[in-house]
Every structure is written in structure tokens, then in C-alpha cells.
Image (cartoon, rainbow, N blue to C red):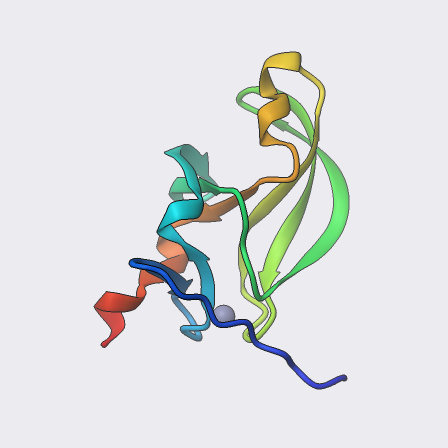
Length: 113
Ligand SMILES: [Zn+2]
């Protein structure tokens, strides 16, 4: 294993991994809070840090067929959501290269301290 580089974010509200508390995303990068994850409510983010991608797979979601990859926290290896790699429906294309993170897998930094 190589050395682990952790990225630290700055912003008014920072979302952290609920398991290991490393930074994941900032409030400004939330595109939508109206998504459904595997474990309930999930947010769509423009950008997420400190993650690795799992294998690419085709998945049929409520909104149709998508190519997605699960995303793992780099530090504790918990699956926190997935990344949309490709959407087949024109109306769903805006999600490409965006990230879904389960609300239950995140904590706000202000709630940790
Ligand atoms: Zn973690």
C-alpha cells in the first residue's frame, strides 16, 4: 500500500465520512438533496474527495439504466454511495460524473466537534 494522502476541504459546511470523519464534500457542491440511496435519503454532489471507485457496473435505477461505480472512503473503505459514469436517458445526462452519497454515511463537521 502506498502512502495515504488525505484532502482537507474548507467551506462553511463540510460533510465528513460518518465512520472515520475524513472530509468528503462541501455544502456548495450539493446539486440535489432529493435522491434515494440504498439506505434512504442521499445527496447528489458535484465533487467528492478522499474516495476510490469500485468496478464499473450497469445498474437499473428508478430513472432507468445507468453505468455506475460504487465509491469507497479512502481511509476506512466504507461504501458511501456511487458515481454516475453514464446515463442512457437524455434527461438523466446531468448526473454523469456526479456522486451520490448516502445521508447516513455522512456527518457535518460541525456536529462532530
Ligand atoms: Zn471513512
